[in-house]
Amino acid sequence: MNEIQQEFKPKVSGNGFIRYLVSIGNMLTSPKEEFRRVDEHPRVFQSILIPVVGTLLVSVANVIVGFRSPQFEEAMQKMPETMSTVMKYGAPIIGAIFGIIIMLMILLIKAGIIHVIAPFLNGKSTFKHAVSVLGYASTPGLIFGLLSLVYVFLNPNEYIPFNASLGLVFTKEKVGLLGYTFWNYIDLFTLWSLWLSIIGIAIVYKFSWKKAAVILLSLYLIGIGLGLGITKVFQPLIEKSNPMQVEDDTE
Image 1 (cartoon, rainbow, N blue to C red):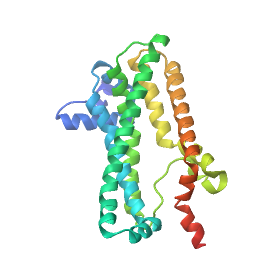
Image 2 (image 1 turned 90 degrees about the vertical axis):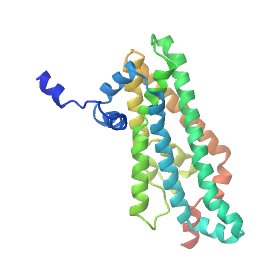
Image 3 (image 1 turned 180 degrees about the horizontal axis):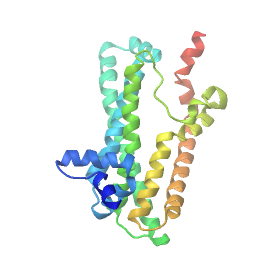
Image 4 (image 1 turned 135 degrees about the horizontal axis):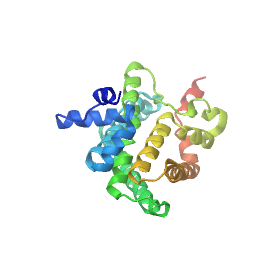
């Protein structure tokens, strides 16, 4: 029986790019096995590339959706032609770069916190291992980016971004901006990534998944708290630029 299982187990071999794609695919089918490979050989660059591409795909999808917004079209008509050209082509590039930089900063800070806390829970590994785990655990974000682009192209008249969170149920109209922001953090792909992170950190730091869950869930809740705080500070500005206002005005 073991021989049969070994025969059908995905093998990471061959061309480097194919090997890389297989390792990403393993995050969907056999994450524990892939994280054990990461434990043996941490792959920082390859792992970081996953959330970078995922962030880029989401940025492209959001830009396309934003260009369709009646508010954006109205704003472009009021601007001089030169300025509108700069906004149309320059702003998306700057936004994507800024988004990737922020994402990388958060990932590295998160990995650093995990690496500092882990020894107090009898965990032992390296910072490179933590970064590699978090990078590969971002595979759901890559899938989200792909689905966002598919959604955009399948719905050419839609100017609401693809969403897989409870914000679809608890909308801004029902629970207000802060409530909507909170429920927007309860996202299928984010929770999936969190689950993968718990598995990976437990494997590379060689402690129980419960200890890994305590660290990562704490960071997740702190992130939600910071996000709500930022939303509260900028609430007037956000509500002023709320695209849903356009719909309300047309009713």
